[in-house]
Length: 218
Image (cartoon, rainbow, N blue to C red; front, side):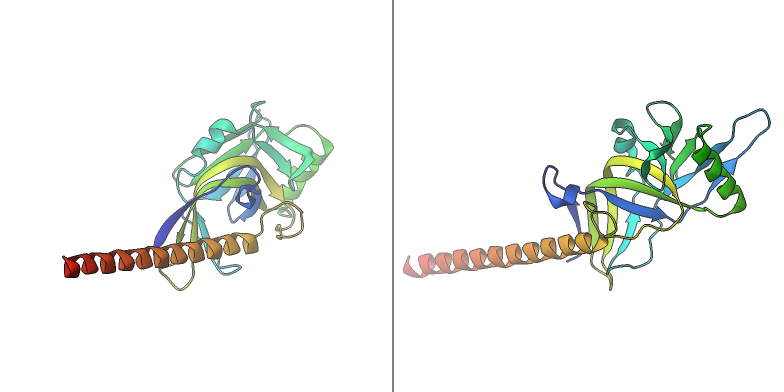
């Protein structure tokens, strides 16, 4: 079928469900003299295809986060836990921006026990992965190769960026959209397009036969 866009629906539609991804990116604890330490790094990388999982490959297009950054009140959390907040965009303690590489962030962590514990674990190398929670506004599918490729063209809402202890596994939190759900949506949409194509072909054939009869009878 080639390449096609899927603008995702909102409201009660399953497409609007929150997704979470582990980013294979670098982030670190930045410490300078006479400055409070900051947690800095990339929450996501552009055009960096993830390994095939659940039957498809996924990547993020440059500019995908632009609108979400402008409208979302994004938090920085530990392990996506809202009780362990590290920073907030609205408060100026979380700075996010897109550059040519991806979605960059800087966190000014609070002087809380859990934040200090996190920074200690980061400096030891115990925690070295980052994750982000989001919903998708527009996605693109390319099925011209052996494995379908999903490109996230535009993120609708960006909820949080989170240093994480363990990679997040789908189906461990209710209400989240799993990669199985995403693949099934793609298959349903592909089937619907194929059925629409067949219906249009039948309509075209009927019109052609009608024209031929009119010419013959005329």
